[in-house]
Every structure is written in C-alpha cells, then in structure tokens.
Image (tube, rainbow, N blue to C red):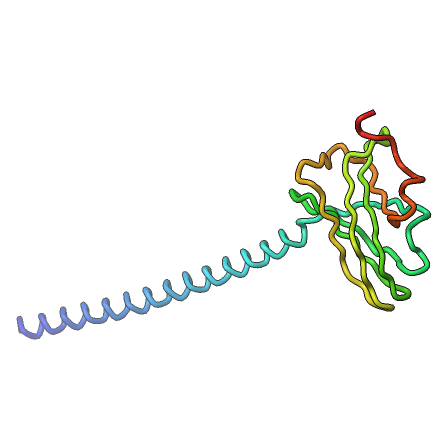
Length: 161
C-alpha cells in the first residue's frame, strides 16, 4: 500500500510538472508575442519619426525663378539639420542654378545656398539646399527661391548693415 501511495504521489508530481511546463510554454508564447508587438511598434514609431523629421515651410518665389521650365511642389526644412528640401517638377528640360536665401523679418539675409539643378522634361524630385551649420534658422521668417542669374537685382539688406 505504501508503494502504491508513492506511485500515486509520483504520478501527481509528474502531472504537476507537465502542467507547469505547459504553463511555462504558454507564458513563453505570450512573452514572444509581446516582444514581437513591441518590435513592430518600435519600427512603426521609427518610421513616423523619420517622416516627421521635416517641417513644412512656405517659399517665396522671385520673378527670376524659371517658372516656364520648373514648378515647385513643396518645401520642407530638416529638423536639427541645416537643410531645406524643395520638390521640383520639370515642364521642360532644365539645367541651371537656383538660389535659396533665408531672411529675417527685417529682410536681413542670414543664409544662402546655391544649387545646380538638372532635370529632364517630366522628371520630378527633391533637391536639398545645404546651409552652413551655423545658419540661424530660428531667426529666418522668409525663405526666398530664385534663379541665380537675377539675384543681384533683388538683393535683400546685408547682414552686416
């Protein structure tokens, strides 16, 4: 009878162990599922952060901008980087220089970037105007885009005046 009681105790212990293993498996599965959800959330957040790494800005376009060849889509300022991206669409082949200037509310220039643009008819893409890292974007109220050849006749006040 004592031997039979030991077998019953051993059987119950075995059932408890098996039951614990299945609980451990379920727990491990839950942990794995949660880790997968967190990884997906992290990847989605990183994607949102990347797309939100730019702020929309409004550009003024001077008469010297080659509007017969190019159409400006939209412009964005990179957050924490001295870069302004402008989406350009070519109505016809275009090769030339564009200039983007940053002006204060008092019309004082605080930054300037020139960029060579080469687009074939019906092409469209972003062009990045790079500025010096010391450019005070926080003081810039106006972003002025022009063709390079005509900028001398439309100079804003110098920052040294």
